[in-house]
Every structure is written in C-alpha cells, then in structure tokens.
Image 1: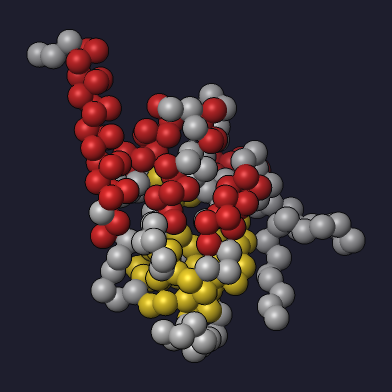
Image 2: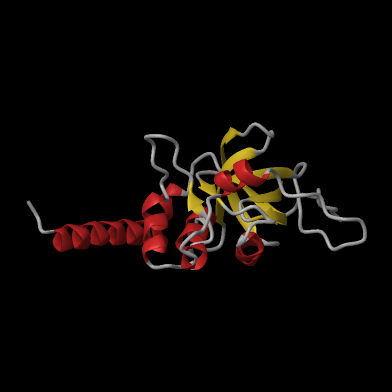
Length: 196
C-alpha cells in the first residue's frame, strides 16, 4: 500500500498528464460531424447562439441556441455567473467555431461540443480549466472534463477560490431561476438576443 502523500502525488500527476493530453490533442472536440458557425451572442457561461456558415464565412442557415455539453457554469445571477459569461464571450464572441451537436436538453437547446476553428481550443475545456465551470458528471459517468475540474479545484482557480462555491444545479434547487430583469435596467438575465 502506498503512503497517502505518494498516492495523492500520483493522482495529481495522472490528472496533470490527462490535462496536458487534452490541451495538446484536442481531438475530443474535433468531431467528424461538426459544422462551422460564427458565434453571434453569449447568453451565459455555458449557453450561446451561433449561425452556421460556409467555407467563406457567409451565413448558411438560421441561428441556433447551444449549451456546452458536459459542463455547468454558474447561473447569471449567481456568484461567478457574470465572470463565466464574460470569459465565454472573450473566448468565442464573433469568432468562427466548429459545432458538434450530441443531444438536446429539456429546453430544446442543442447540447454541443464547441471548438474554436482557428486554434482547435475546446471552449468547455478551457472554461473548466480556468475554474469558471464545473464538469457535469451524471451518476457513475464522469465528464470528459472531470480531471480539469479537479485540477482547478485543487489549484483554487476561478470559482474554486471560494471554499463554498455552489454548483449551479444546487443553486437552482435552492433559489429557483434567475429573476427577469427589471424594465429600464441593463439586462443580464435570460433575455433572448436581438440580432442584426
């Protein structure tokens, strides 16, 4: 049996190797069935609107609302929610991306892996790496981003700098959805975007 310190060091080393593999080999986000799109609006830390484009960047279809699959970012009215939204905006707003839809959620949003087209950065992985979203594990199934989330938590990055950071699902259970914005106030809640 290994001493506790050695076991912890091996676990951290394994997570670091996995993290580096995901960073260097973004094949997890590069899917054969992906389609190109331009990000037109970021709703919050894990939801965005895109418009499909052709090879020249010209729009080819209607806008689609996406949710990044396998992560859960704070609600916009939750502590860290605006920070997560702003980080996603900085990563993708107006940029070309590759979209690989995996399923639909109960709200009809496409659950997708979104990868920046120019450098193949998996957007969800980057948010989790920065500590701005949780990996979204389901029962026995660990998200592909679980090691990144563990590493961000261990490093006290982003949301995990707060020892009592609350998972968005727990926040929603306790507080319900974010309130609608008041009339005349700048909106940060779930308002549908106005597109040009």
